[in-house]
Length: 137
Image 1 (cartoon, one colour):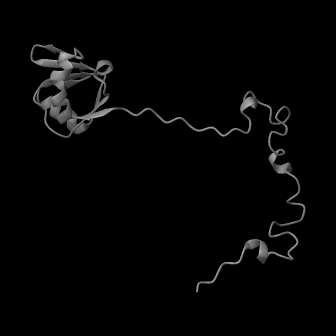
Image 2 (cartoon, rainbow, N blue to C red; image 1 turned 120 degrees about the vertical axis):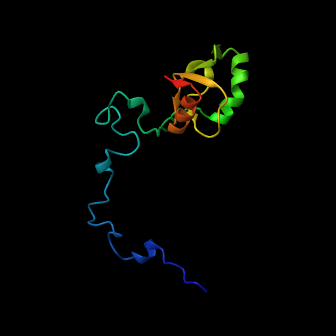
Image 3 (cartoon, rainbow, N blue to C red; image 1 turned 180 degrees about the vertical axis):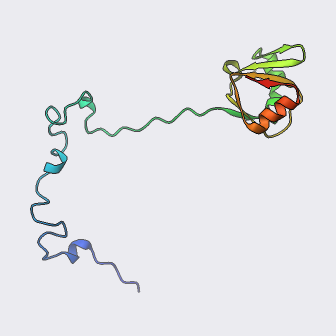
């Protein structure tokens, strides 16, 4: 049968300071400015005094919507139908604000000459688009 580990409090029975150094060290809450909301109108006063003692979470960053070339290839007829993209001659112009995505990734092939405005592209996607006669601004 495995041995049980002895509790720290039991180990320190009879040891006056319980492993916390000098007996003065554990008195009160002086080193942390009091307990709870103590001093919230004195030494811990700031413009955020209403939120003193409340834990706050950081807000998550908004992620960019990314799309692969093969997905974009299938979406182009739909974007033209919804008037989120414009066809000028041979080129199809897609603007970032209307498109619903902000980055193009390089997986797959594209069948159209497209021009992207206000949309980022990976190196592979950029190469593929420029081979088809498109460009990225």
